[in-house]
Image (cartoon, rainbow, N blue to C red; front, side):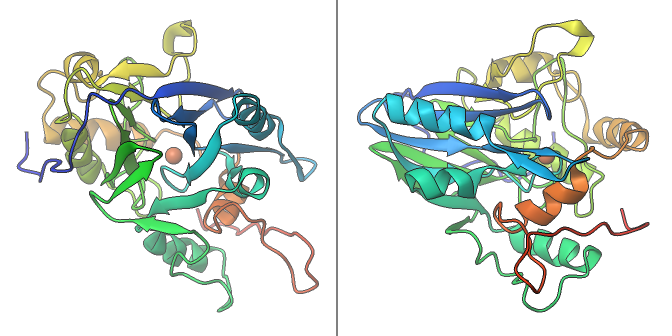
Length: 299
Ligand SMILES: [Fe+2]
């Protein structure tokens, strides 16, 4: 294992939030509503807005399910967290915020992502690259509260520069840093990605307590098994097919780079990046109409 700085934020395993998962079959994304056990406060993690690419049409079934759950349980929404700038689905964060409030937060690495994709999409100077579209930019080990629950964000670059794992009591939300043990890890070949960095980030995540619950952002049901999203740090240390047991950094980087070279781009990467780097807002043309671009030979 490398000598990466391990997590030194305060872990509190005595706080055990209720975690409700929401699965989007279009992108195999799992979003969450996380409730503070001591109050009605909750947080949303990785809300999805659906997009019919062929028709250029948005829909909100997934986000509506989250909203209905929060309302019917009388919860108050404090945070809407993006674990990173997703490349495979559009964020439902602003749609939920308009209805229920809450602050939209993402890792401070968003500025690097905005700079990279601002160039690829040839955005003008009106596109701010300072993360100001979001309500909160998290730095490594930043702490925050959901009701009375102590939470912190751990910077985990590698898949993307803005990736963060969020820890809420005894539950960690992996984003795309780790998949289920039989799914391994996420790709590291998007602009700004780095397989070695991803290994170092995973090493930090796996230094959390082994009985901490870990919730993943994607699952593809490898080998035909049912979709799953909950595991533990200990199960990952032992059995993750990419980093479990004694996988070295060198082996991981070689495996990741070989594998990534064979992967197709996610179907929704072009619209997802344009929307998600704006905190889920749809870009507009000079007339104010919602409109997206298709850069040719850039990705
Ligand atoms: Fe991702």
